[in-house]
Image (cartoon, rainbow, N blue to C red):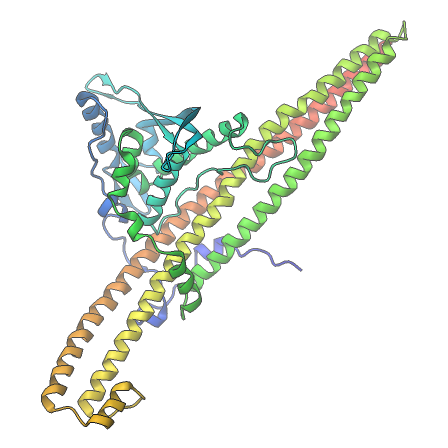
Length: 487
């Protein structure tokens, strides 16, 4: 019997845990008051804005005024307060962002080889007026790889955030009549919509929207990649081997993150099955509708040999032809609902990324605690002159004699300094872990509300579409019945 996926509601509201007084207790969440600011205000994610390239001075100043007026916000009870309003998407009331079109291009890659790719036009426009003047629309072209670079940067600098995913690079879960070619116009159009949705997700996020690299992505067309690479985010990224090592060697993982990781796996599995079922249904539905076209052909042929019944048969055949051809538009609309499900299929990996970062932090904390305990034991052994465990130093002492008191005192002094430094590092890692957990669960709570709302709306809309499709089928046969009645 299959196990039901864990209840996310229970995961997001766990029972209070003991305070983090020892590294073996795990990285529990702090339950105290909200600290001032947010992770997004530090380092590369602060509210400062670099000078955008390729903009006129007057237009730049007006755009900056709008941007800075938006990002100066205050945290209050997990929401955003600005002009007495508490809305996470208030930024969208200031700036409109759209990916308006896609264009097929040919150029040379880093290996100086010719390649064909798709570029997407990003347009940003202020919806407010400054000093009686409206800010002109800014537009620039970006490749999919540049969107990937932006997201990789956000993953590194905001590890506690469930970073929105990008649309698929190549079509997955397609039914047999749908092209899997990533240059297919229909696929490119759906990906354009997905990239626009990604930008809107980022810009409506209370932390990510403040990032200056994201701002330059929207406004700086030339040398943007160089600007991102200058942040050195690649050097700060955790290696896959290190993450895998932490997963298997961490001794005291936080149960909440372990269960959340399991939930993300189950969510991905459920949505994958749903998309496969939908693709199989689409295949069969396409065949059923197209077979109805045979009715139209037969009725048309039949009408040619009938005098009194001919008009009725001809009209009925026409309705069957319309019914058969309607499936193309229906399944095209279905693909947009499938893309909404795919977004949360990819969101599952974003949840796991947060869990992996926590495992790495917990592993580093445990290693620091183990190293500190080892140094304390060495210091105690030197002070008392007793060796509790086997060590190379103990064997050396037996072979070459005891150390002089001066040498022992010097070693004890060095160890005491290392112990003091280790205690400070352990304390720092504890505080960093608490802050990570607090921020991560706050963002997971935000994600949970977004997910519940989006999937509910998508499933309802899909059901409404199916009802509409069935009603159209009933109407076709009702019209055919009237045609037969008039014969």
